[in-house]
Structures are given as C-alpha cells and as structure tokens.
Image (cartoon, rainbow, N blue to C red; front, side, top):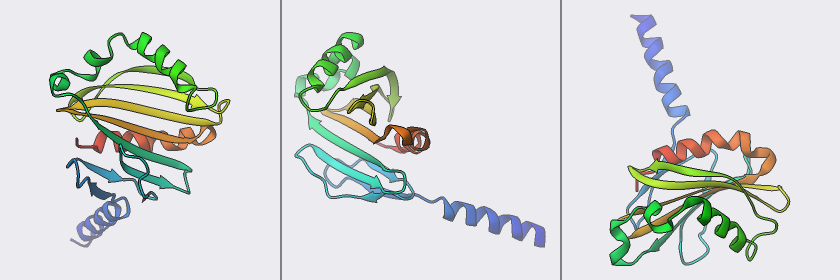
Length: 170
C-alpha cells in the first residue's frame, strides 16, 4: 500500500511540475498551452492576437489572425495559395522588404487543429535567426503561427514548438 501511495504521489508531482498554463483568445476563442518558462507579452500589430516569449530559450511564439473573404472560407490554405513551391519562391522574394537576407530552408503540408496547413522554415540576417511558420484556414480566419529564435537555439526549441502546435485548438 505504501508503495502504491509513493507511486501515485510521484505521478501527481510529475504532472504538476510539467503543467502548462492554458490561454484562451478572448477575440477568436482558440486555446493554446503556454510553454513552461514562457510569458505572455503585450501584442503589437493589428493582426497579432497572441505573443509569448522565453528569456531562457531565447524564443518567441506569435499567432496572427486575419479575416478572409466569406467566399474563400470553404477553401483550405492549400487551395488558396495554389502551387506550394511557387508560393514559397514568391514569399521569399517578397520577404526582402521586411527581413535581411531571408532564406527558405524547407516547407510542406501538415495538419493543424484538424485542418490542412502549410509550414515553412526560414532564416534571416545571414542565418542568425531561425523561424518556423504555419498557416491554416479555419472558417473565415487565416491563422499564422510563427516560432522564432536564434539559429543556435533551434534544437532546444523544436520540441517546445512541436508541443505548442499539437496542443493548439483553433
């Protein structure tokens, strides 16, 4: 019996120690788990709905939301962008307006919150910063989830970002 009590106590302690804080968007109703060590930040920009960052992992997570036309709400992100390689080539060319030396590393399609999504990884500032971006359409909203960090910190942040993506409920 004592052995069982110790096991249950350790299991509960593990759950509490790894507990994440649940955050809910008051404007759009989606929920996200704030990773351990991250703090919600003041948002900047008209389309940014969520931002959290971690000093320890030198990482940030942002969620931007844009309303799309009523007619386009029946389409997935893949339908809206067309050919993914062409979209990525055009994205990289346009990104020069906002970033120093943007370079798309890889891209593809996945599922995010039960919807088809596109993702792409890119570098800026001659490889100094690493970004992972997801775009998904739910209803008449386009969600853009962006993870960023120093390039050298990417291996540390990838598991955190993956868990965030998997727990996100749009």
